Length: 119
Image (tube, rainbow, N blue to C red; front, side, top):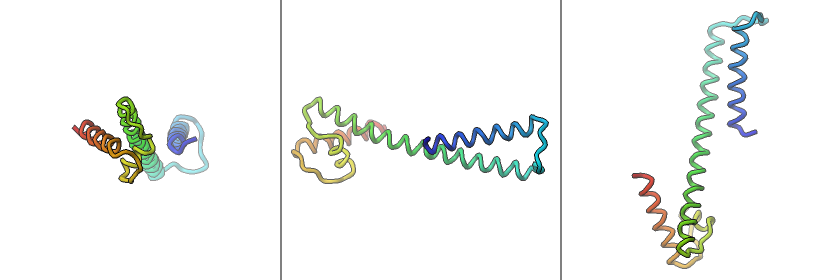
């Protein structure tokens, strides 16, 4: 199970527990104070904030992968033979061994892609 799913499961279970404690006739062997409720709420908020951050990092990675696949696919139609890993290297600023024309096509596609998605 991914960390995000585990966090969401914990969040859901803690809310179920709170609802059970307040809705049933169960009497716990401790006192439920307002301080405890606030601490539980704070923990739940932190867990949810962490889950959202994890989702954003996943989304950034997916966008980068999609950008690479889009550029490679578009250029392949025009006859460019560079692979996704070579395009990734160019995107990351690394040097590759390939025809200069194809490298320049990738650089131009990256510029075009970036200007299109920031407009």
